Length: 194
Image 1 (cartoon, one colour):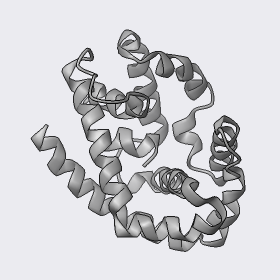
Image 2 (image 1 turned 90 degrees about the vertical axis):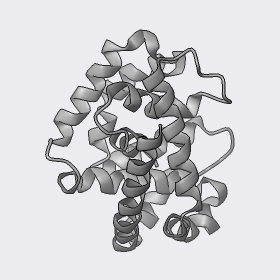
Image 3 (image 1 turned 135 degrees about the horizontal axis):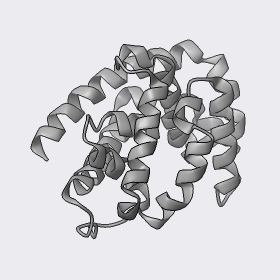
């Protein structure tokens, strides 16, 4: 899953959301210098990724892209799934996505000293371009994929995958909806154990 899903799945705890959001940039097991709730967010992020990568529905989505995008297929589907979460946000939250995103951005500012240097660096761009809300549109997803493409070490061509998103839109959305219900159940159980 991508940023929006990871943040959403953290529940109402701001520090857990932050840990879950920045966990990709934290390697290994040496993260005990963070506040406990940020540590829990990092652990939750890793559990979500493991669950997602092994899930048959997620794998079905990636299979549709594999011939053109190879090992980047999972990253692309993560972003597609964030699009469907943002697009259908009212099915998952009573709060408007714009308000939810603003509250998260404010919590990043309020906890700036607890952020990794990488997160501190990307935070202004994220807020200025309102990444979380931009996921609602295909154009927003296209911009995200284009930005990611330029950061990849090797030619990924992810920016072109919007073609498949449009072509198989209903299939991807149906897969997301079923998968995300499973993921919410898994995550809610995992949080109780942290």
